[in-house]
Length: 149
Image 1 (cartoon, rainbow, N blue to C red):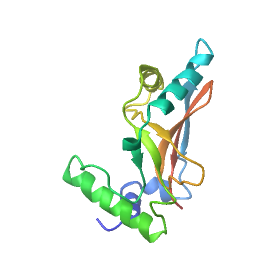
Image 2 (cartoon, one colour; image 1 turned 30 degrees about the horizontal axis):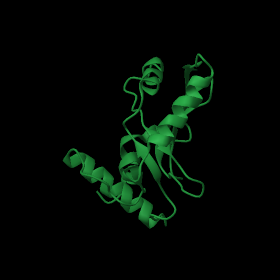
Image 3 (cartoon, helix red, strand yellow; image 1 turned 60 degrees about the vertical axis):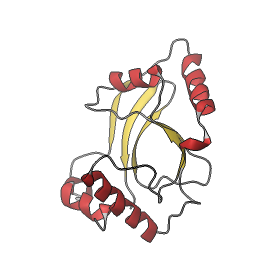
């Protein structure tokens, strides 16, 4: 696949239609940690558990795709980002799918059909140009879909 951007436009037309009533932001509820320090403690412990093996950037393919379609999507995604000027030096950080039970519980409580829970550390100056992200404050859980525009 040459362009993940073009594939998305073909498969998710609403996202590119200014007349669409769909929203990129969906409020899904509140998560209140009890005790209040639980969320702060879990974030700190998760950050402390990251290692150099968890480093990644948005223009290098790390590991092996799990199927042919995933490989094609990854190729198109990386082509788009490289053409847009992204490099290993201005993207990435550290990330892991190995998350604690508190984060899994938050995903389950969100009511989302198939939440994908990952802990990601994004250093200042590093971009994550195209992604879906769950943003957590101490009381609010939001699902956002953002795109490179």
